[in-house]
Image (cartoon, rainbow, N blue to C red):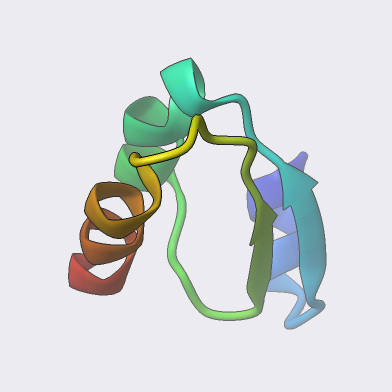
Length: 54
């Protein structure tokens, strides 16, 4: 369903559990997405760097 919304040019706000981040990144394009992620202290830099490479 998210791919159809994205294909229609709509923006999406998605709450992604950290353990599902990689599969989500593999399946979706970054355009129009706003990700909400909960991470433990000290993980922020690594997660942000991964999302920026996307």
